[in-house]
Image 1 (cartoon, rainbow, N blue to C red):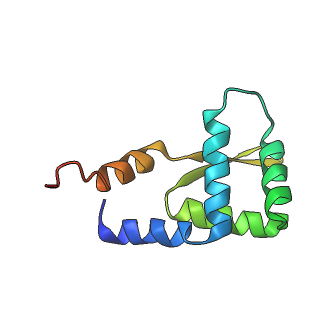
Image 2: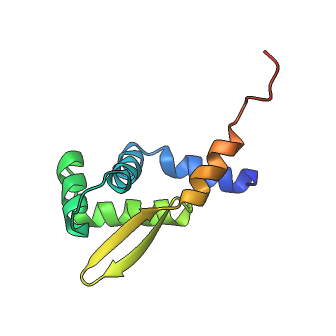
Length: 100
């Protein structure tokens, strides 16, 4: 991962609402229950008290940074976390090789 990619990811996650949306999508994927795509977006809008256009803007920013992928499912937009980016970020900040 180069510094330009890393800066773009940090910029996307520096917005409090985008960070909350990203964490909500991540949590949704980790849970083992059935929910509709609309359900998670309604939950996000309700929890953050923001409108659908604002959520769409934040999803686009997260997608542009490579943190999520989005796909249409009928009238819904389904967002999934890019697991490769999460792995790369984890490796990027692995400081276990540093002397203590």
